[in-house]
Length: 136
Image 1 (tube, helix red, strand yellow):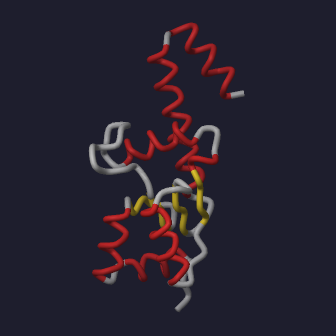
Image 2 (image 1 turned 90 degrees about the horizontal axis):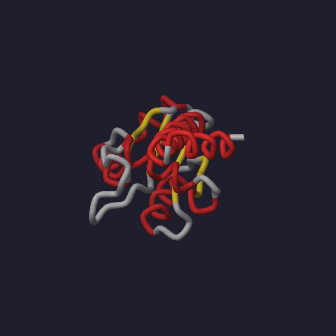
């Protein structure tokens, strides 16, 4: 259904309007998915940093919901929406990637740097406990 609406918008208003609509749909989808589990990781299956953050959470005894963007037909749109949420304006900044992106308790924690900083400074475990992802 969304494909037909986006196609109609592209014909009626041109590509720019369709792209904005797709971004809003993608952002809404990201927000909906982020609230479906205590910990949600938006990932790309071939990304080493994504693998590292998944291993971090699994090693702590957390079972995150993982959304593999490269395996989703609208993953590219969601990746652009995530980049916007991270402040990249819809594109990855040179030398950085839009993934992994972590949500805990439905709230954006951020990319790998923010997750690792929270882990090192001791604020990650309380976040996980408050979200119900960790019971220790």
